[in-house]
Length: 391
Image (cartoon, rainbow, N blue to C red):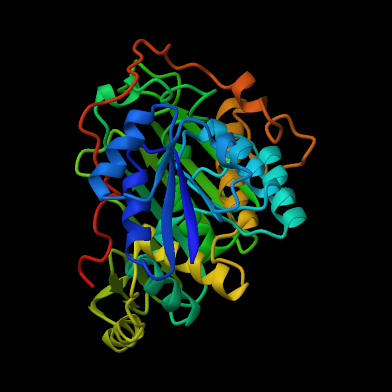
């Protein structure tokens, strides 16, 4: 039985609490920690967590032997400090995205996990969706041939007041805008599927949120050793939030939400009206024969984390995996700021790698013009469109 402390009880904690409650025979939430204790009290009452104690500081429970796991749902700028404190105290850690505010902090978290022998896992809940899980399995079948191009639309929409919350919209507290805190899900998914690129070029802007220092729209291109390209758009200005990943192979196109298309060339190379239905049927069979996941999104990742603790195996998304996503995001910001192509991996001596480097060099598109301590009637954060439609 793993005894869980939820650190930070804002909106995203709903998804974590609901996940743990699916496994009452494997875990129990015994502590709720928030600098606003009334938020923790609200979650305790809402979910009937009668055995959970309320704390206002995570340091108050570091040496509590009745706690096994720190589940960190705080704003990003304290992810590293709390994770390292917990690991050094002999606790396992499941930390929300983004992993940390810098690659240097990621290294410190990974080192703390290795030194303590405890498990560190970073939230990347899109890996635990049938749409992405099945898409990856079809890719691994090699039926579409060499990968040529991927289109990643990480389209979200947030109203102007979204950035009024006190920690959002600042480089120091949030660490970045939509590229870091929204597109991280799709960035993790595409590097999980296609591997790590060698070059990144990008541009960022803020077109709709003049109460935030950070970007609300970015466009990036990743180049791989094979010559393939990924084209990524990160946004919080897209009405409808029509998110997708489209992967073009030499033989066919596949995508999430699921679709497939295999062209046939005429002798002159132009596509004919007829499609390669034989290949399309094979792709459909490959997709449909992948078993559906029993648990999805945060619940799926929590189940994977609990399984890792029970069996002593590595979780699907460990510290190094969490760092890979942040390295791509760091490269996007560096390219946009310097107006240059960035080669990967980023050197540990690079200012953008180091803690405080990005904050020092990042542009302020606007200055933060409002600071709301808390929003009323907080609910679970919507996690985007159903990527399984059409399956």
